[in-house]
Amino acid sequence: MSVTESEKHRTAHRTLHTTQVAAPAEVVYGIVADVTRWPQFFAPNVHVEHLEQGDGTERIRIWATANGEVKTWVSRRDLDPRSLTVSFRQEVSQAPIASMGGKWVVTPVSATSSLLELHHDFSVIDDDPAGVEWVNLALDRNSDAELTGIKDIAEKADRLDELMFTFDDTVHIAGDGQDVFDFLNRADLWPDRLPHVARLDLKEEVPGIQVMAMDTRTGDGSVHTTESVRVVFGTDRIVYKQTTVPALMTAHTGRWTIVPADGGVDVTSRHTVIIKPDAVEKVLGEGKTVAEARAYIHKALSTNSTTTLRHAQAYAESRRG
Image 1 (cartoon, rainbow, N blue to C red):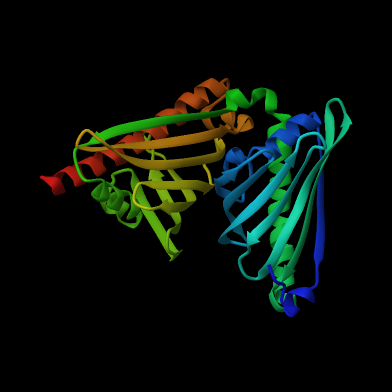
Image 2 (cartoon, rainbow, N blue to C red):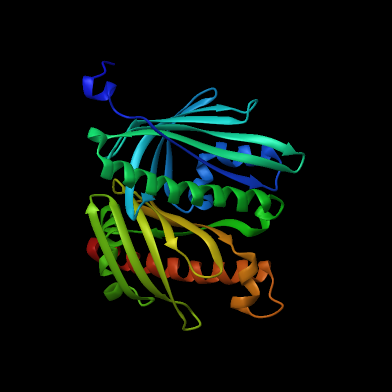
C-alpha cells in the first residue's frame, strides 16, 4: 500500500494508561483476549463482531462511545498468551483519527496480582491540534473506563458465574418478519404501542446506529430510566447496550433476532446482565441476596421483553391477516 507525503509527515502521538490488578496475570489476560465479552466488561464498548479468526490473530468490528459519540471501526489483533500481550491496529479509522494502534501488556507482580498497561499510538488528519485534543480526551476517558472494567471483573472472577447471567425469551409469530422488524426498529413509537414504556427519545443520525433514552415501568409500579445504543443489522437482528443502567446492574446488553420458522418467524429477546453486588441490599432491602437479585432482574426484564414480543406478534399477525 502506497503512503502519501501527508501520511509520512503526520505526527505520531503516544499514550500509556496503567492499573494495578489484584488478580493473577493469566486471568487479566483472558479478559483482554476475549472480545466477545467486552460489551459487558467495558463501559464504552457497545458491540463487537468477529470478521475473521485465525491462529493467534483476529479481525473485529467494534462499536463504542467516544466523547459522547458512537464510533465504529475495524481492527486487527495479534494475541500472544505466552508474553501476555495483545497488539491491535485499526484498519480504517474514523475522523479525526488518521491512524490508531497499540498494545495491551499484562505483567505478573505476584501469584495473585499484576500490572496492566494499555499503550496507544495515533495520528490525526492534517495534524489538527483540535483533533489531537479530541483523541487524547477520548483515550483518557475510554482507557480509564476499560482498565477499571478489567480490574473490577478480574478481581471478581471467582464470583462472575454468580453475578453474570444470560437468558432468552422466544415467541413464534405467524406473520411476516419484515413487519416484526419494523415494530422493533421503530422504538420511537413504543410509548404509543407498549404499556410499560412511559417515554422514549430516539436519535438515528447515522443509519443503523440508534441512541435512545427510555423510561420503563416495572411490575411494582416503579419507573427506571435507561439510556442505550442500538446497532441494527439488516432486518433480522438488533443488538444493544445500556449505557445508563438501573442501580442493581453494572452492565446490561441484549439483542433481538428474527428467524424464519414454520411459515412465520421465531423472535427472540436475549439479555445478558452483570449484577452490582454492593447494591443488592440497598435496592431490594436488608438481607436480600444476589440470587434474589437475579430472580428480580430476570422477572422484570423478561416481563417487559415478552410484552414487547406479544405486541409485535399482534402487530405482525394483524397485518398478515
